Image (cartoon, rainbow, N blue to C red):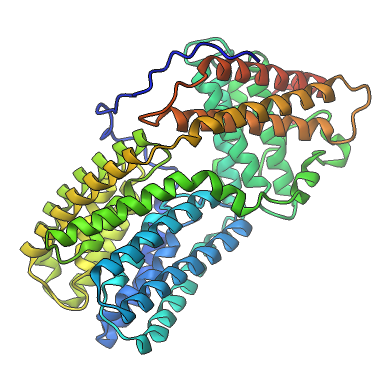
Length: 552
């Protein structure tokens, strides 16, 4: 495909409008909010009863793992949570050992920055999802400046492991009541997104954005279903519903948006999973061809996923180190706050990093004022301190989905109160340090993001274009084959759909880089259009669109 003349300027404006706008809360905002309270409360209350709240930082390391993997099916969640706990313990171990071996603040900041970069890269490569690397970095960075000896490290790690095991149990417990809840939600989201696109008939206002959103939702639903292991009867029914969403995405003019939304409503309830008829997808054998082959295919190696993240990791390491050094130079007593602020900024590109920086500063400054109001109550006694932290834990997770700055209003006073578990401190000093570290971390962190350009972003668009063209050609050949192999059309369609989603995500990430060569926007649009035309051809070849809305 010939290259079109690009129209994008090299220097992109950074947004101000809408950065603080509140969005809709997550469908499951209460799950991480309740989980973190259930995970944090027993260890902290136990330490309170024993008079050892000074050890709460170590149990918090394990307890906060309950924040992760709430969008994953329970089989996949069990593995993900176990790895999160191991990653948390690993970072904590490195921090505690470093803190016991040296008192040099410069060395400790350097270790913290390297840990933050590693945590950022691994979390992004594994797509562990919110809260990502920030919680891991908060714990490891704070531990670097906690007093202790080498002999105390095993005991502190044991506390974290015990709390992490409890967090794993808390995260898995809802599966006893609603074992297919995450898959049902992902499928319902795909059906609703496909219905929104179907309502545009493929040509109405906003159809391109609706199509991209529906494609991403359908792909996410397949990723959820393909990560669960055994193909149970409920999961097969969910697969059929995702196929109906795919059909609506490929042939929107023939789709019944009302039926798609009705199925989505049934999935969000507690009733049985609706079972639509999917012609050409197993009919009497109740099997979607091509799924088993995908389940057996090897996962992409972690090292290959880490490679493209090198610029982001370098930004994180440089920004966190410089933020910590500047905080030290200013005489701030807790340089790890500046380090964590810088670490929290880094997103997929500079534009998103800029937005997160504004949100972080606003949220932290308002949070400091909230701490001033909460501190007198929390200082009434150790029990009041623990209960205040639990309430702020819940508030942070309940609000952060609406906008990061709103959640930070609760995170900031919670972090300040955690520093008082060992002994109460002067509120004015804490507040001053927090404000200075926030401003230093945000400013220095963003400068580092601008300084470390991500030239690979444009290259990844070319790779994504090539991958899409290859997948499209393979799907087109499969469509025209007289007798394709069993499951070949299903696999080819899903491979092509994944390539379309990846191209859009890669293009959006590259478009947000502040200093980047002009992007091949016309090539991307044409490639997406060709990809969706071929997807529609695979649907017609399979005959899936002929009975849209029918039930078995």
